[in-house]
Length: 333
Image 1 (cartoon, helix red, strand yellow):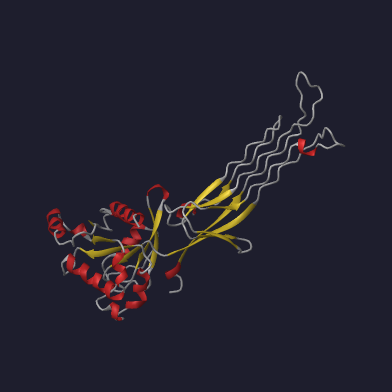
Image 2 (spheres, helix red, strand yellow):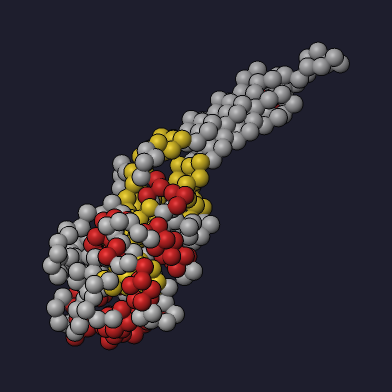
């Protein structure tokens, strides 16, 4: 499984920065001055294309469909040494850990690592100088000014090496792959027998207002996985970097919800006690088969102090509420 542990989110965009505005070649004239000197102002610089780190974004999904990023051009200079306005910068918010590369050369330009950090991806063209810059003892009324420099057009690659924000923990057949296929565009292989998922599946889950997060279906752990039984260690290590653990217990389990949850928890603890410090959520899957009465009865079996929801991937029951619960947990990190 070469890729799964270091999932790369990737977009390729064409960046076109703004042209610089032209300098003005104006000569001063008013009712008292018939032949004044040069007073042409400088042109404004073209808009930059800027990347800005944001902890509100977890993936590059919001840029997947923006192929062309175009910044405004600067305005021309005016009379009375007035400088033209700068072109408006185009600011792209990206998750922390985004690496910018030049698509032609493959050169890595920089990485965004902090919230609020800004770096220029494609600089705008410089504004041209107005004619007053060119005044000298020999040329007292220059009737020329500099044109603005053109902006750049270049293809850029943005890459994000992310590990999942949410790890799904549950026994084989708990409905993890089905949940992942419902909330994201991931297409895991789904079947009704244990160990269908042999490598972690990663899915980008769209959330409200263009936000998104990454969910990983970690292959079902079984009792004894921490001792290396079954598919044990290979998969438990994928959970170590997740920021939130979502435990999935099916409504049709032979045990009580609490028993099943505790077995899963013990496996994780035996493997790495630090996993207990992560925020934990609980979803009781396949609950479309429960009536209200049964659901109330089962709710009494839920372990104390863990946020939980009864969900169904088939009917969509509480799926949006589940996303809300996950989003809240990720952002409280």
